[in-house]
Length: 177
Ligand code: FES
Image (cartoon, rainbow, N blue to C red; front, side, top):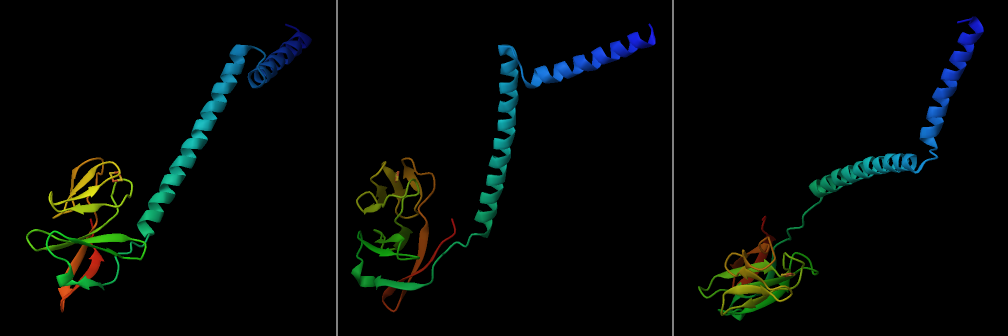
């Protein structure tokens, strides 16, 4: 091979390489277009996964630093106003949090958040069955423990500790679940 043949051969090789790059970036066949679409799709997936992972970390961090308001002790009602099998509604720990105080058949007092743990509907007391009932999707909670007995809720009702002080029922705090 002469020197000029060799130069021509190298130039053709370089030119072929360039063609390959050009062809893969700007395909002219429909098969090539599929490759580009797949490549873009993978790129999109990587970006979406990264964004999702960053979002999850952000939510976890926010949850860990969030202050959970368990409330301050406050009087609710005169103890003799709540008789066996009846309920008294109040708000705790804030004015926007409905709560329910019950006097059970064994004369014990119990208080719970009135928001169903499924989707937040308000529960009511059914003393005949000794249950708290959510009418939205037929969720049922044990009135003595707040545990779910039937229906879609998966968590018990948050319990509020109570105490009788000088004839008045006080709400103390939302207990940790
Ligand atoms: S909101 Fe109570 S069962 Fe769905």
